[in-house]
Image (cartoon, rainbow, N blue to C red; front, side):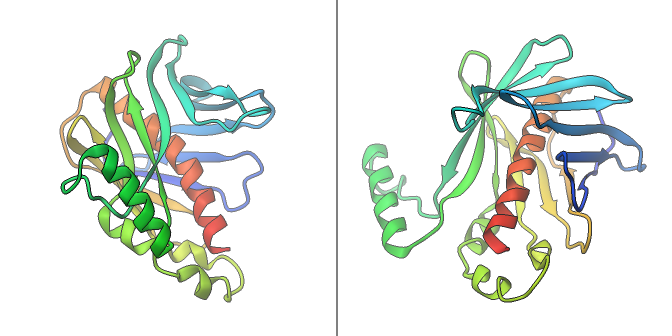
Length: 225
């Protein structure tokens, strides 16, 4: 178990996508690097050049868009699977049956021109839903604001001042909370523990967060630059 909070930092101009993760004392607990030249999307979590975990897409990134990833330990054993999905700001599931609710949500979202926000579902090796990484309700609403119209008029890297928050759940409980810090040159995300979890759950959740951040950071850059 690591000493929380954990800080996830990106280089400003990374040629190879890389996240450095430090614990409360400032010690590097692992480094996550995305492999560039590979038929499948591959991310490796290492410490002192030793592989701790890997995240490998099930689909080829040459012919498909990766949307399912296996979390593997140092022996290559699959611990869990991450699947990307989209979260709507509209939820009528408490009013209408599930099938009708999905259709109604889509129609309302389309008519109001709302964004669908990406989330990441975590499934066990037998396909059962066990957790997720998703924007918190305030962030979900904030990302609907037309901030891009303002920020795109300002040159440079002002998207860095957008600070979304995410919650990380295992089962029905929020175990960790992740928030982007307001920084100028280095993208930094701070993660606090909020619930109890064991070593195996921590490993699955941290790998899921790493994959999520690789996509969320690019999503913010695309949206606001």
